[in-house]
Length: 486
Ligand code: AMP
Image (cartoon, rainbow, N blue to C red; front, side):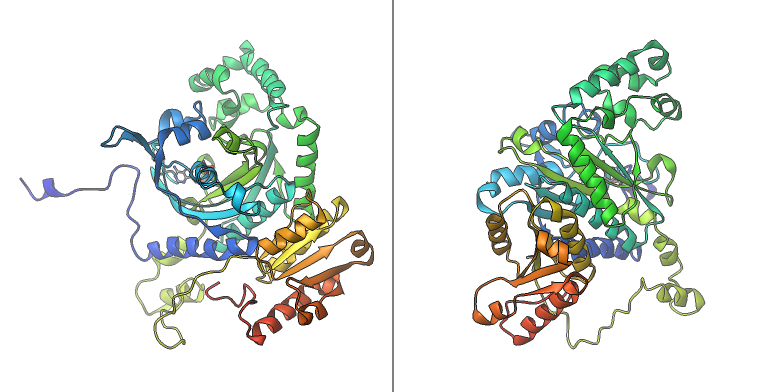
């Protein structure tokens, strides 16, 4: 056998990630791990493979992923096993299996980072093994949860330098209103004029999963579906209210978006909000760096109680390809000279040497929120959302409590979530543009620190309290900004 015959290469569609580029991927996932706790998310690790039916039941039997892309095999005991093609199904399975809904305050917020496997035709930005970072908020019914996740997603993409990220938004309705929309869509697509112009695959989709026709990237199909009925025109009352609130929340946080009526997402479990982030830094055929939305019916369909939920996933390789970092890294060699200096001055390559004595200390990130913001009634929702966003920008881990529950239930939620401070905004505070800041727990010293402050000073007051608590050294309070290694 010649030497050449002995050489192996990686399977098609997968690649080795070698230094220094491997450092880029690691840095991006670490960065996500630093950001997500600011929104109240704890890390979760689920298996790389699940029983096949977990994906069949959740992703949906007619989806492209299940019909074509899964790596499925029988293990030695004859069980059908599938390498995970996405992260949500495993997280929901774990939520139900461990009966989290009985034990933890909801929403249960978790984030993950890990490999996904899909048998797709490899091309630029599309691999058979790729990394995703993502979050799931299970038990999150309210539109504010959608808005906060979009904010986290964009903060990450902007933070790693994705070129011109653009948020696309749609609502695809729910069980109540989608059938009427599907009927209209089916009627449109089935008309001779339209169906004759669709690709063969789309024609097959009409009867099985007409929403997916809207997803097709072929230019001719896109030209035809431009005039298809829009799901937002068929929303029932509750879906309309939810969608309006998501848009109002995004506007309140200054997040720009484009309504995209053909954004349906590939997975069957989505309802209401669907969103995607695309980047001009990528080829138009594969320009999505992130996608997410609501999946209110999924927990129930996998055997849990009816539970609202929302999540997103970001493709790590794809996002990094949408930045300029790879170019900068490729000029890292040689170690001295102007090119290397420009890489270092970009801020990407930080020196390995640290001023801290000895090797780094082992630390575990605490993801309990520093602050729970409580909006007392519906009129205070936007102000609560905006305060949450301002606090996080200062590195303070903040969760905005759902409005749907009683005030007492929300204070209890703040306590159970392990928050140090609640920031309460009621109609009175709204009128006087103030925020009532309370320390959790009931020692006299803490009660003495409760106060109402002007809302434009709320963030600095919270920071001051957290800092003073932490310097008092009782070990119970520290800001996220101070908690190493955030
Ligand atoms: P999805 O789970 O399909 O919503 O995908 C979320 C994100 O993961 C996409 O926006 C891409 O950035 C990334 N992604 C999905 N499929 C692949 C793939 N085959 N290769 C690389 N990245 C992918």
